[in-house]
Image (cartoon, rainbow, N blue to C red; front, side):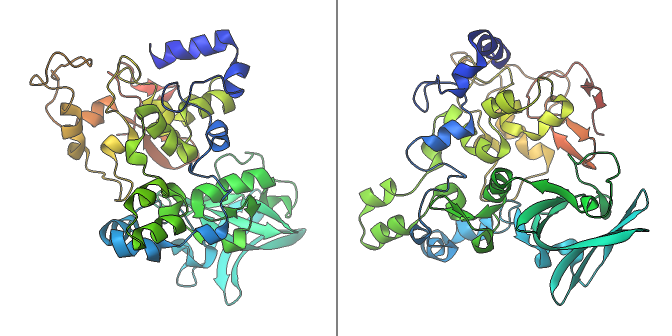
Length: 390
């Protein structure tokens, strides 16, 4: 059954059933909303119920997994969140400014840290900036702390511009007054979700402590707290060591994609949480788009998961031709007919498969293009009105 057919059945059956958990056990049903995954026993990314004392930090992982740990430090995930004074766009005492409808917003680093200031003819408002979210490859958004709360900066840094512009998701209308022009005040639940996907150990024992968060996505953000695992390994109790750490390599295809979807949004997350037609913006949610593919699901190929093409311990490979071998693993005349994926060789090209079958699209407001992970024969060069990127 295709994902689109499955979606129709869910709607007919009542979306509330899915939200209430009308799925089988992990691995034998469709994609789940992340909230359901977090309610189940065991570790799952963004879960914050383990005590801080159960975490050991990257140093303990280095002892046995030195090469992998070193590689992971070079990934965008490792740099997904950082203290504001470590943000590359602000280094060298650089000041960034943005002008909008009479307002001037400025980001500057000084002896006391980073400050975000907005001023107009009637006055000004300022706030300390404590965190920068985003590795900076495409952009970076800043988190302000003010009046015991958190504010998402109205403007973000965009690498293509090498300048500031309005943060995606902020209201397009000019704000009314300097205080509101600082940005959008965030609820505590939303803040925690952001920190859980951009930092490690921001939430432990169900308590949110942003000041104790470790910048970026480290080993224990995906594998879970490692103190018990490290103790078992020291004692050479290998059975216990395997049982006390999360190894995503053994997950079923649905669970594996949902595992990444804890931050990148599962297929069910998008269905339950997004508007009926999220438009081209939904290509940012790679797990959702992957599961929209014709080759996904019961009639698809079990090898199609996020980690089939991407190693989370290494930087994203941007050379398109490097993915050809992944495509040919299924789509090759030499592959046995007994496999359940249609085996065809392309009549158009012999390399750079993803350039045609996973095109890039420019997303409004982001000043960046994103690869569409809905693997398909593309018959229309547009997606919800947006043209493919060159």
